[in-house]
Image (cartoon, rainbow over all chains, first blue to last red; front, side, top):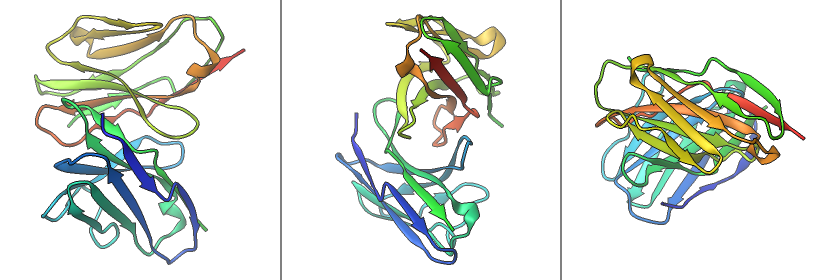
Length: 113
Length: 114
């Protein structure tokens, strides 16, 4: 299965700032997915990122708040903009790795003060 | 809409006990996939199993076993002779054929006490 590296693994940020999370995969993949896991909660899909096109956002998530880049088939970034404490979460990158199986990165744990 | 329910928020057992984690799902589609993932304290999600909707055979992998019953829309996970290293949050998830989204349950926090 694919190996996913995410950076940063954790960060503490000030309210009103933005943070960009990087996701690197060791193989070329068509789609990359960004999930959010709020404290003590389940995972929710933020958006799907295809190379060469704009990301597709799920209901409740907008591009201005969570801009995504997908410059090539092995890399994507998710930016959390104008952060508030409610954005404190684990953000996980995932890719399809085998038939219908999603592999996840270790996540980026974000704390907003 | 699809939904996955894990009614057990937290389970705590003593090592070597057997434990079953329940998962009930809702979908009107006939072709779908069910998953279990493990999230240890370190935070990463570890894939455990995928089951497609046409395969109701139960599966056993070492101390782990899964019981898929379409009649009750359930996909339960049993750990036999539990060990402390099994302590984690376990998520059940559903994905429709052709869909991008993986719909997760709320997770069950399993604590195995020595």
